[in-house]
Length: 143
Image (tube, rainbow, N blue to C red; front, side):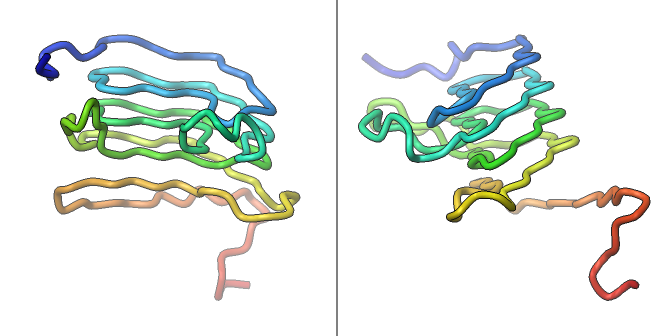
């Protein structure tokens, strides 16, 4: 059976998700035109479901394009994995046309390192970071 890109899941919203103590919280494959928003995660680590065969990530996106991830607050958790999707050896689309807004990742109390934000794309990519410091935050080199 051939995998058809013409059958993606599309035009949906995943919102108001709170989760803890698991290996992966939000997972989308072969999706188009969607929004993930208002996600609160704690303790999303590789310590859980070790035999599940899935990567550790708070948000895992495979083979998707034209999407927005907005308002993800992660504490002591693996971050995000945005990459190619493969079904039965066939590659789905590469991640493109995406936007990440209001992403918070605080692993300062975690005893070991986990994934940050990983984006795999086959095209030349332009990544812009818009730093919005808190009023009392200090940027390196600026007292």
